[in-house]
Image (tube, rainbow, N blue to C red; front, top):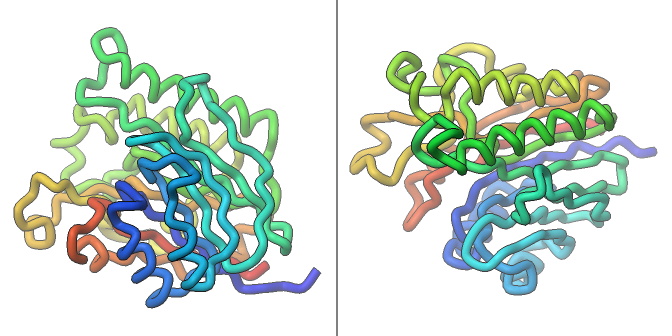
Length: 265
């Protein structure tokens, strides 16, 4: 099997049709071999695949819904769909998995955001989030990943340096201890390695800034909600992690920035 250098980007695009021009801009300027999108907010057959094919990405697998959720993987090279699981039986399009010709399997996830109140007794959405994470944990306990990457908007900032203020956000959905523990359980179940923090272990790192902030760049009240993990067996082959922060400032942007990593496989 020939070894190839594969750069993967993950991006919550917050409507693939509304922001198709931003997707093409990223593809043309950054040229990742694979781009994983979340929150496409589109049925799969309405995704503007012709635009992406023109950019050199003719291979696309997707699961979609009208108006919300939705995941897609765009690739320069052929990619075979190998799974699209409805974790916790929510009936949502939140996961798709594909395998490249070099044998690398890519899981693309959009974990539920969880609503505003971190209490499943009064907020069903928070309960759905915890149940979804529990189902992910069980899946990877029973299917230990090999030669695999897990990417996506996991909607949880794991460490103190993944949020702008750890103490202030401890009771805010996306950084509560129960969510952090649940996502760590998922990571441990699959023995996944957080590639971004492997490459960039020190300092604040954010991939999301709220639309509510008038000057997101100056206030910099961000969170690292978007992740790239790699299975332990190929962790040494992962490198060059980065977050394309300036994409948050593009015209009519997503509130998320793309995250990148490269794999020598």
